[in-house]
Length: 459
Image (cartoon, rainbow, N blue to C red; front, side, top):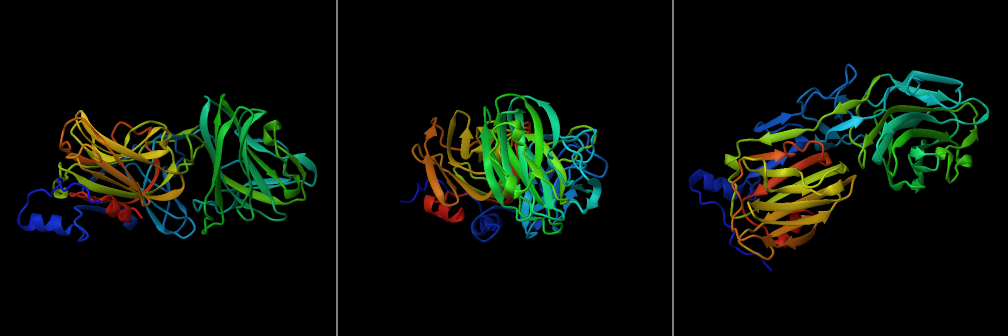
């Protein structure tokens, strides 16, 4: 059943009318943003502060078209790529993030890292790192039976944390690494990975008072042979340690205490590590390099102040967003993408809920609004769309993600959407709360699509 036809195109004539009818792609759209080109539309003003404490030569990171990590300068938009295929992923947008780990690229530095057992040899310059510097760290084990964890201590409040590191096999026998985030010897989350294959040997598990353990493994960084492994866990008490625990297949156990550590008999084999990061929140964001202190990357903002060519329709319209979410928001209802009024209040757009588990399509005009949500998961491509129909009370908004739609009803008596003054990617003032990830495409039509049409657009 088709939606109400109360939504109509703006009354236009001449070339303006032709532009609306044909659209940017000949499909009636009046805004098409393709970020896989690696170019930001000239109508945008992009801002991201300088952050704090980045070591010289580094900054906010992203994967370049050659598969290596690159570092952006202040106010430089980042266009991310798949580390395995080098395919363009789009514009990288992230929240304020602090790497709580010090000496993140030199895990052999015992001023900040504890090597539980002496290694036969260590080197801070043993291999080409993911950022194409010769700073990959190697650890060669002695021929004895001991625990060999590498860890750093923290003093942060209880909550959800993600611990990540790049790793790759060295020489000799197959080795595993177990990542552990702990608040006490018997309260921790862990996951175990095979360095030779990238396989998950033990799924993320919570022990004691820890909860909500999950993990991610990046694709192989084809340019260098590294993979990025990460573990997310919620701790009921303050986080105190992040452990990297090497082991062989035979010694892999099901830990319940001792911070997840285990002994095994070394045979002179080696493994490599680089780029450790402990951050607040669920999921790994882009790498933040550190030296002797923690470092902070500040949020990305892009604002289009002149939207006259978009021909926004206050009687209704359709917007779609394609992207890839890597880390969930820590807050509720900040605008992720959409049209804002002069006070930066969302008029039509996509928002995220607490912990970023759902995306919301919403339109508003003062006390009148309508919204509906769909679930979203980390580390998966999504296509999300929202249709606004303020002339209706029932079904005044329709949303769809990956071809699955739902409708929502209107609250209030208004019959139009508020007039926007700008289009924004991330809402000003909410830099600590946006979902992290890439955006590949955004489109807007000044007409309402049916639910079936929206499902096609998001499939």
